[in-house]
Every structure is written in structure tokens, then in C-alpha cells.
Image (cartoon, rainbow, N blue to C red; front, top):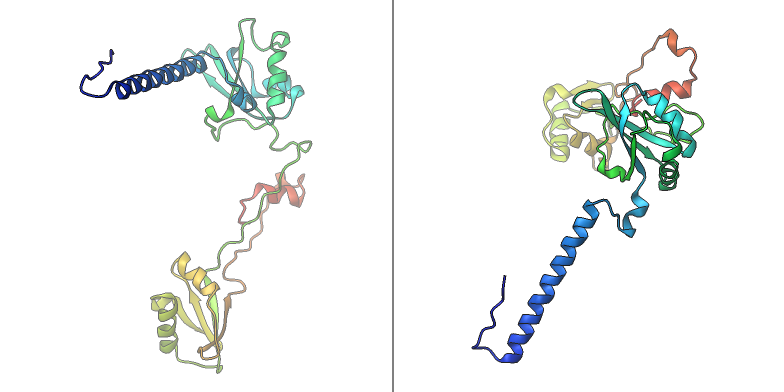
Length: 260
């Protein structure tokens, strides 16, 4: 689009505006050219370190995850492999993610000597963030003892059952219910019961559970202390499976959810 110079403004202002407009047009053109270069496969220098994956095309459908892993594990630790079949199911695409970009580069350099499918197999480097992870992806090192794993942090569930002990050793359940209502909100009467020298409390939601866990008991309080119940917050059971005999307790615990 041609830019017309207004005649009513001073010439210096008009020239400055004209040069600024041309400069903006030049910057936009450079940005467009840069975008076209990145789309054409030319990677800028600041993205080189992010190239930690390979995309293989025209790989034979007869190749399994184990076969692909056996080929590429010599270059480094393979974190994830994903195979996507084409609509005709005659060939597929394979995405291989390494733990380091140097391993991906080494595998890419050796692409001509690799035997993956037929001779028309193509290998291309890419960024793993551009591949959406799926629960069905193959993670070859998940049970491999040779790979150092970070131990899964065990999460202790928030207790919902509490015991509040009266300061005087005995108290009124209705007064206790009204006191707790002022401190943590309304509790259904079915959630409060007499329990020895105190009362048994069941929080109705997570908010009340956290408040009960941190509720102070000053000297003027009707309760001496409030603490989680010893057994009601946890379930114990015995798991019997003859297939587990070959695993240690640490391995069995690693298979369990983090709340176990």
C-alpha cells in the first residue's frame, strides 16, 4: 500500500512519519521471512538445544517398540517412544524422545547407517514439547534398574477423623458442637459423637479437616487438645498375589499409588 504524505503538516514531521512507516514495514517483512524460514525447516540457533527428539516416517508397521528401542538405546537414554499409524495402516510415524539433546543429535547423525524399516525411512529432529504425551506411549526405562530414578514422594492423606479431649475430662456435646461451629463452621450432628473423655469429629470437607488439624487449644478453650484419630484415617489390608512373590517390598510399594 502506498503512503501519501499530507501537505498540511511541516515537511520534517512528514518525512519522519514516512521513514517510520517504512521501518515498520521492513520489520514486519523480516519477521514474516523469519517465520517462513522456521516453517521450512531452518532452525534458529536459540532452539538448537531443544531438539531432543527424532521423528521417523515411513517406518514399517512390523517394527515393535522393543525393536525400535534396541536400535536407539545405544545413543543415550530413551525416555519415550510413540508410534502413530497412518490411515492405511501400511506405515507409521515414530517419535523418539531422549533425555539429552546430544543423544538425539548423535542418533540423527547416524541415520544413514541405521536399519529402521526400509530404505525410504526418513529421520528428522524436532522438539519434544511439540509431541503431545499420551498414557499409551512406551516408556522403556520405567522398570529398568540401570536408569537412575527419582523415588516417588509418598503423600500422606489429610486426616478427616479427629478426637477432641475435654479440658475438664467431661463436657456437654451440644456446647462442644456450638464451639466447633464458631471455629470451623457448621458440622452435621451425625459428624460429632461422644468418645470416651472427649468427642469424635468427622470433618465434612477438606477445609474443615485442615482447620481441625491446625486448630489451637488455648487455656480458655473447652478442649485440652485435638488430634487425628489413630486408626480411622487409614485402612489396612492384606494383598495376596502369587505373581508378587518375585518382587521385593520396595518394588511392590513403587507400583502402588503415592498415597500408600
